[in-house]
Image (tube, rainbow, N blue to C red):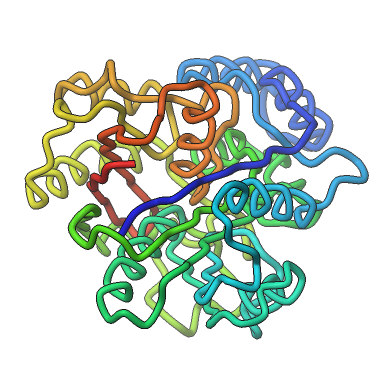
Length: 346
């Protein structure tokens, strides 16, 4: 399998850490404690992760506009039209069709009318899981041209992180809220072709005992699994995550996936990671000798979830850092928790 092309589209509005704390201040007037002190702590901790700004939809912008832009850019120069796509996969956290699945309605909107369609939802690992599955499907020779799309727009009014997670009620809630303050938005499109069967490799490692470190509990969740103290700490429908613990697990889990895959990132020309914290991934890179190869987008985009790696690839390509023939290594740590290590030649 080869990645023929990858494209990303970002909203116009840029939200700084200062603006983020202003929003928290506005929504947290009933805070039980010293709010100015807490806001200073929030800003300092965001800056320590390396975050400078994140993209959010501006007034009048729609997620579908960015999906259209990403898909058009991904297909440009390929000689393929939307009608030529024979498998269309929607991935990620963002999306508003849960009964039907986002792939079908988006395929109709985009004119991808001859494709088989399905969604993959595995938190921030969704894009990586989709590539692994498509790589296997290509070997059945059932598909030739595959498009993977996500629309990670999770700061829309009424979504799991906004404006609800701008409401901080007490100091104890802060640890569960901080990751939501790093969220950015983006759409990506990845065009895959059925060539070079041995080009793509990825290995996963899962740790379900950490499942409650990052989640969005839905109404009625209590009847579906054993509820721990972490689950619904902020309430139903709220993005709830423990950032420090998550990155501690990533620091342990990614090397396990790396060892299972026998991938040597020092041999790569460029490395892509989850855009979850630049400082955390720098530490992992330093421990394993690939820090200088990481192409970071987190400072400018924030955490764009399952769009992290394709968005980084698109920006690296635009910057001339990713070219055809580049040896790529990639690493992902995701809610679940799950970890992945992979490689391919672009």
